[in-house]
Amino acid sequence: MRTSTNKPVRKIRLIFYGPCGAWLLVFFLWKLAALRIGKELILPAPERVLAVLLNLVQTPEFWRHFFATLHRGLVGFLFSYFTGVAFGLCAGLNSHFNQIFRPVLVTMRSTPSMSFILLALIWFKSDAVAIFVTFFVVFPLVTQNVLEGISQVDPALLEMAEIFRVKPGRVLRKLYLPAILPFLAAGAAAGLGITWKVMIAAEVMAVPRWGMGTRMDTARTFLNTSEVFAWTAVVVFLGYLFDRALDYITKHLALPWQKS
Amino acid sequence: MKDGIGENSGIKVDTITKNYGPLRVLAGISMTIPSQKIVAILGPSACGKTTFLSILAGLEQPDAGTVTGLSTQGVGFLFQEPRLLDWLTVYDNLTFVLTDKLPQANLRPAIEEYLKSMDLYAYRNYYPQKLSGGQRQRVAIARALLYPSPVLLMDEPFKSLDLGLKFQLIRDFLELWSKQPRTVICVTHDVKEALLLADEIYFFSQKPTVIKEHFIIRKPRAERSLDDPDLLEMEQEMIKVLIEENNRSPRLL
Image 1 (cartoon, rainbow over the protein chains, first blue to last red):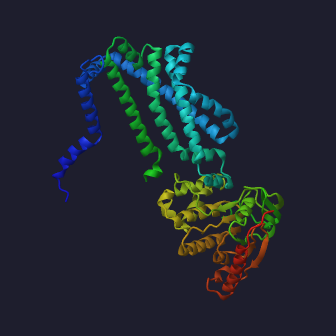
Image 2 (cartoon, rainbow over the protein chains, first blue to last red; image 1 turned 45 degrees about the horizontal axis):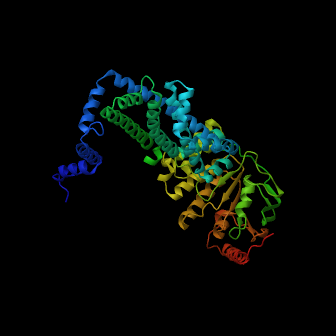
Image 3 (cartoon, rainbow over the protein chains, first blue to last red; image 1 turned 180 degrees about the vertical axis):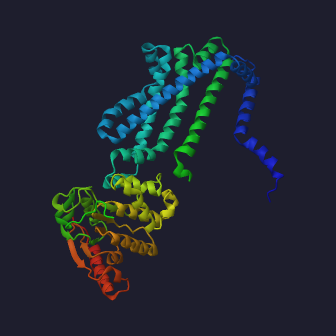
């Protein structure tokens, strides 16, 4: 029999068995490892990283670095995403375009990210390096998702549209795009996830004036491991926020027929 | 309402052949389908009935032979499955096909009239996944009959329904069709269905497919029932032909 006296017990269980429990375990193991090593230079304790982070967020520079990376990341991601969707649609709907485009896509996917970074360092100013690199990493990922989505569109529905002579524009808007929406969402999630990783790597190499990667590189130069950890935590949190936002948009706004 | 549906002199199919590699599917099909009549095509499984329908729909080209009398504005089509878009409501599924096929001012009233006739008006804002199998097929019937073409092709449209629902839907279909008759070519494997629906029945042979038999049903549709002795006799005769053809193995070219 369920009674109200069970509620506090269930809450405690949720804390220990839910995501909070996982985080507590990570911090606990981290703390144990830090105590065992005993050197802040190698592995700072979690409370030390937290203290550094709290100090950082109170400085105006932190926010300039934060927003510079956020801005660069969003510009790079959105540009790569929409270009990827457009090229993916063209390649998925036109076999001639696909034949020409596929080798380019394979080359982009197979090229190491570091090659793009090194080339971008030679070709561009440091501010543009991260956006350029993000494009070359995210674009093929998104395009691949769109191509996969188009190949999964039910041919029976396409045949129906063909027999009823539905105009191509409406077939694209009302049939193809909603049908590939789960693939567009998966592409966005994967693309956003990788954007922040590539962005930081590119900023560390290019060292633009403002950017979290620049601060991480500076912290590394001064052997300030706690600050490297603190900036890493900010990047992880940023990635987590966007992941949750995208999940909400996908589930609640973009796929209403699945919700009903 | 006569949106875009004109009178015509029927469809003439003249010696159509179709091969898939070494396999001869259609080996010279000829028939004349009178305007505003329902013609059923019966035959053994995989004898080329659907290929014949695809040629009439313009999805495939025959290797030889001609089809005349088909509308340039396309044909209405009722598939075996409803083929609705899961992400569009019932109403939007209809507008997906019918926008710019019906006059803009007439679109909503026409759709609403058909939805009411099919007992679907209350479900117009539902997504297809929330409807039963029978309701989904009713939406497909409304879509096919609203499509402004003098010709409607049907590919085993009642196959996936249970017996009671099947005969209910056939009645509903005939009621709507009689308000605005058009030429119907219906492929089916069900003799009873063909006897209730059709004015004429063509029997296709095993591959290479030719017309094996041609039946004309003169009894008015309203007077037909499944226990009618005349229809039962015809049914027995058709089942005999069907078994005979099923027992014959298909031959290559």
